[in-house]
Image 1 (tube, rainbow, N blue to C red):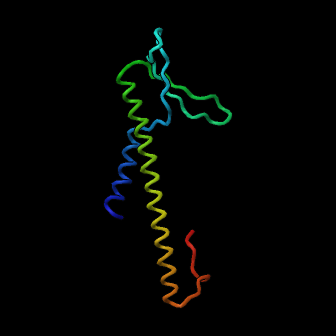
Image 2 (cartoon, rainbow, N blue to C red):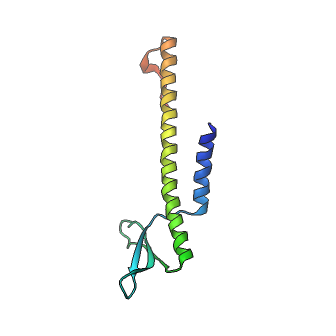
Image 3 (cartoon, helix red, strand yellow):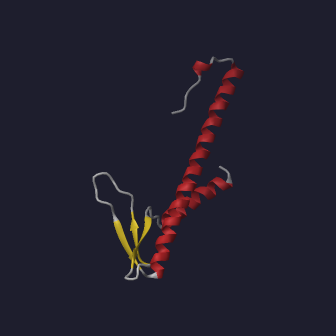
Length: 115
């Protein structure tokens, strides 16, 4: 593993430990029509009503919710990057196996496949 790979794993662990929120912001207007009260709308699950959490108008709670949403997006990005790295490693291992088989003179169909 390269140091950057370890950093990637460490970053995702830190993000997950800090808390992730997979929701979108929805603002309920006040009496004048200006956005005032924050709600978090979560993706709807089949057969269940849509979950909606009230955050309110407190600036600290709003900031915390926004940071958690941003962490979830960053977590997904890093997880996708880690998956791409894993796929590249698997492809490289398969090519190395094929190269070794050619050098040993074994037919292609005798190569062992990785599960």
